[in-house]
Length: 526
Ligand code: GDP
Image (cartoon, rainbow, N blue to C red; front, side, top):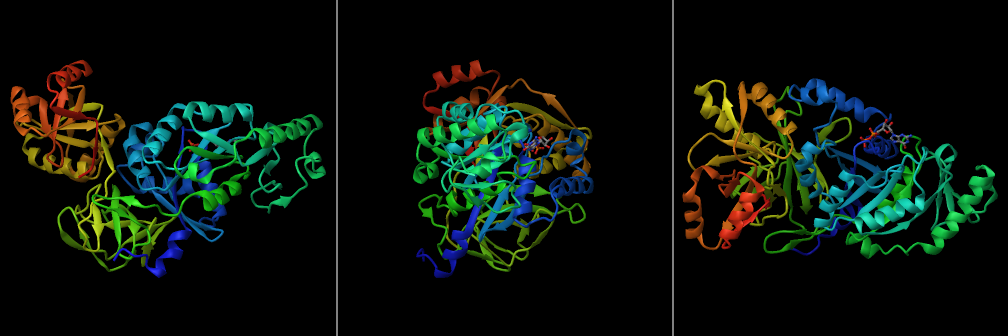
């Protein structure tokens, strides 16, 4: 049953599923547009933004995004280039939605790290790289905005090596920079590429007269010196070490001016892995196994308000997903018909007749699927690793109309299943507490409860500042701990116990007093 199926090897080997990680403003949106443009997925750059705006005006709860000019939505974009099929998973730019980003990173096999050439590694880049590290996600580096004032390229490489503790190998070198930026020099093949729309041109080393003709004399001398140094001092690129997340190939460019982007696409095709094995409880699932498996990493409601739909984004991990097939939802053991699985494009979505490992399909449903769910063709298998993080803000939710308490409880359960917020039900039966990582999540919750459930709500502060999941091998001790203050104990969506502390200090105190209890700040779904 687990032998590779001959028909799957080819589509699987062609697929590259990745995300872009960056600090806001480094150029992620611009680069995304250009990747799609060169990949033939869209005709005109600018459509990614246009599409977002369109979606925002169509969708009522996204008023928040519109007002604040931020993107809350995570979506999937598929494009083809050079025989490869790329699935690019977009992540929200605003750090209040970082949980969404972390979950999305569980569904990719590689990441592109975009840096602003004037700034190097910034706070959010660092945090996202740390998340990639947890899953050994290989990272390709794109140093953007080379057409502007930049840091010294060697200092940028040094910054990556020191800040991220990662080896670097420049694979190209910028020909000039700032106003003089003319293109990229391929250090491996000795070729130059000026504009992305043009083919690479073979040259006779860095001193080639064609390069000389492009740059002011001083810049040319500097370029030749740097290439010599880069070629001499750079570590050789070790793909295995890259695949393990310890070594990053570095590319330079300007997404805005269409330079260096094709180098990057080709690097992703050449070096990034095809869909990787996925760890499940009990065994590891290989992408070319014949039977379909997949897990849900994101739920999005109201992508199209006319249909009031709810889409579960599933990463296919093995086999072939076919339209109309019956899958087993492992959490409930129940079968589920995949009548209308969907693919997403920059501009549209379409029915997916078939999908392979590495593909992301949208499954419309009315609340059957949750984040972290596994679908299979019958096997009782659960993929691990879609995480939940202990929220940093805890608020009690109160319905303006007290008669609607039950409806509120149901609505909150839905919101928790979609991963909008986490919901904790206190042991003492008092009102539900919602937990979020960033306060904008509260605004989204309030707006959605109003628009979709007709519920006016208010948030009240609680005395709690920190929360942790509690587990133990001695249930009696957990009972004893819970009984002392049942208002500080709650159950999450899955019924798992959560302890809420008034301060990090009191949490530490309890941890020391109750060594047989384990307090954790990250939980795998399910
Ligand atoms: P994001 O926040 O990472 O998605 O960044 P954007 O793609 O929205 O870019 C932020 C700003 O930088 C915008 O004004 C872009 O036009 C600009 N920008 C992006 N790439 C480049 C580039 O290569 N060169 C220059 N000069 N500006 C760029």
